[in-house]
Amino acid sequence: MEIKEQTVLIMDFGGQYTQLIARRVRECNVYCEIKSYKTTAEEIKERGYMGVIFTGGPNSAYDDNGPKCDPKLFELGIPVLGICYGAQLMAQTLGGKVVGIKDNREYGKTDVEFNTSSLLFHAAKKENVCWMSHTDRIEQIPHGFKITAISKDCPVAAMEDIKRNFFAVQFHPEVQHTAEGMLYLRNFLYNACMCTADWQMDSFVSDTIVRLRRQIGKKKVLCALSGGVDSSVAAMLVHKAVGKQLTCIFVDHGLLRKDEGDQVEKVFKEQFDMNLIRVNAKDRFLSKLAGVSDPERKRKIIGEEFIRVFEEESAKLGKIEYLCQGTIYPDVVESGAGESAVIKSHHNVGGLPEDIGFEGLIEPLRDLFKDEVRRAGLELGIPEFLVFRQPFPGPGLAIRVLGDITEEKLEILREADAVMREEIAAAGLDKDINQYFAVLTGIKSVGVMGDGRTYDNTIALRAVTTDDFMTADWARIPYDVLEKISNRIINEVKNVNRVVYDITSKPPATVEWE
Image 1 (tube, rainbow, N blue to C red):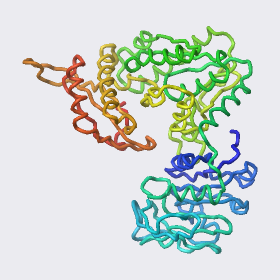
Image 2 (cartoon, rainbow, N blue to C red):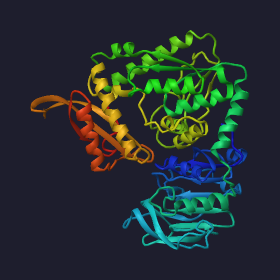
Image 3 (spheres, helix red, strand yellow):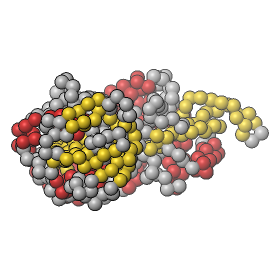
Image 4 (cartoon, rainbow, N blue to C red):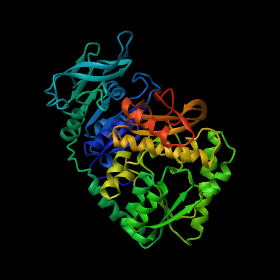
């Protein structure tokens, strides 16, 4: 990865908020990257980081087997901010003392008193609410430090050594529950690290186009375009760079939402004059899925068939040197780039066969988080309805039709889902709810329509709010909006006589039903 002029290192000690810290730093218009706590002081020095942030983590700093940083990094003259475990590790490494808490452990919103003469808390309130989550605490601060914040049960809620630009906070400034957390982070980034907020999306887009043009030269590029925001933005960047040297293959597997295939084709082929091949493979996919009810088998069948179709179509195009993928930064991190547990191995991170048949990969979004990808999409002129397209699983509607798949079931779900999306947008809730969709449950129930008895399908509505999709809360959609959605589905969608709303959070449930 090419190092940016001003970059902050997020050193990952296995904390659950590692990606969130990085996103908050990016929101301050400062570029950052996540690396393992095993990163050496020599590497940090060579890469010229402006500052280092230690994340939280599940271990104890006084445990000999716990993760430790290279102690020589404290000799580099680089500002360091330790958060939670990172604060305790800093204290323990530099000669302080960390102990376990027997009573009065702090978890949740906590009142904290601040010394506002501290560089970290400049222009902050003297008292405020912060988010605590710890079972250890700093009992003795290292030589050269002073305490800059306290709480009722935490005598060292923050400390600093201003001469060496070392800062430590026991609470989590990156979470929304810490009232002025972004102010504390900005103070560290701007006043300690002397960053100048030069990470701007317009410059990323223009710089990336120039870099891609130089990298690709006169060679050809192939992209599997799904119509999702990641592949769409990646394809547009390459298209802006090399134009007709890019060919996109859009595999329409018949499992898309209402009118989605036509919208994708219209935008990229007509509006942007992109080389786009639309493969209408609905019958092929549905025949493979016939009679299959197990969700994992559905996923595997669809994934394998997608690859076969893509291979067949690309073989017709002759020699193509590069493959473009919509890999984004969370894909890289979740696949094990940091120290947090590997959440899932993404198909586009280290999962490609050795005999892929291309000279190399083009991954223009590999450094970006999802919200940054959306901003890049708007910079490129991609329509908002695609940029803010609802997250959609690769298997499409196949895993939102519970049980076996038929065209009749897909059509019922398409219509019900379209109604929900229309009404959520009409109510102005489409930017507030992170994901919303309909599910054909496979359940039939008795109903009364007109003067007759019915025995028909049940549609479930699902809507969640979330920061990172690792956890999610069910969205509190107003009753009148739910009523309108339900009435329209019952009246406009054939073979549905009941609508229910899923009010389960993640965990214990997942966002999708299958």
